[in-house]
Length: 565
Image (cartoon, rainbow, N blue to C red; front, top):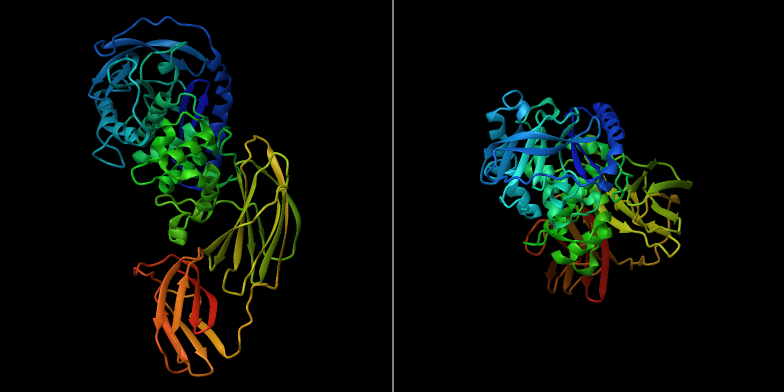
């Protein structure tokens, strides 16, 4: 299911496009959405309407029939309709336009909608949209004093719009209904009320209603990203929706336009939730409550959640763009992964900006969006890969990261240091087992709606490591096999009798000791141990590069090995 939400002035509009089963069908749906976008862009003037419309006070807790303002998307006007309350329940009132009652909507339909809102969702058959959304995002307002959310079902006169939420209903002003109200089409995507299209719209628009209570002027990308995330929270989201973004990853996250913005912002919120919640401190809940907007609001929410000043929205973004491409649940303990999302795999793989398999790569010039990403792949890197990078220094904040792969498994992430003019150089040493391809990831986190330029050069050749130690010929250290899975044998040899204590210590890339083996007063010329890929608590470690250091008397030797799972 492809879902698109258009923010028109003070109205959040849900457009649910066809459930896509094959990626080649996507283009037609994109064109459909853009056609709708063009047709209703003129509604932007809604946010500046000053006309005050007198609305007769109505008691929504007792009146069965009331008049409600709706928006006519075909002629860009407001109209009042008469609707009757068909459901008076604990958490919601459901009103239906009188003209369609028992024609396109009947009692069974409204019971299905009430059940989804109050009792049961695809995520949890014992919890409705109300409970799941309020637990995740916060409580609604209650300006009409009935303690309920009101839902209006009517025939929204546009074939693509399945529902909407109007902040003016809470904030007052022109054509306000002065109540917590969600608008639902009587036949969402021609699938009826009892459909995932309808329930996804309900979950999505309810987040907008909640968010308006806590931060009514939130930046669109944050609000829409969280509304898309609400669909995931309730279990009504399709991975095919993401292909709008996977085909165009160089899309400005913080500047709202259309198209890829919807799945992109949802994916960011999904990643944020999976990796930046601390115990009972829900980063998503804190983000909704935070009065600050955009990345400033996210920075404040990270602090509130307990991340301190070392983690910022920029750090989250740069981790997220790696996760979107590799989505590996094992590497780096799953930092660059989703637990329940196929992005980065199969048909949901992200497009690379450029790919190289022969060297040298002469100066190549590119432009990209701020808060977007470019992926550049270097293959056949059997020697040392050296990259020189130069970005525009004015109005820019570049970040360049490299992911090393060995047999398609990520083994290490390295960041290039850039100077004040956004230039840097790096050499990734390769003795033959560290990596066989490298993904360069370029981002720029300067807040602007324009594009920024950069260039780079790359070579793949033998270089000298000044830190390489020339070992005395009488000592040798090996591990076999290498790469390995699940275990490897580490062997220390010397040409004379050992007759000393020997220690073998294993470290990860962060320099943390993973495991240690010791033997006292050895006799003979060889000592070996089998490492089974576990730490000191016998817990399996993740794939990646590890170092082993052998100490024997005054002699110590260090080498690298690669665990692949």
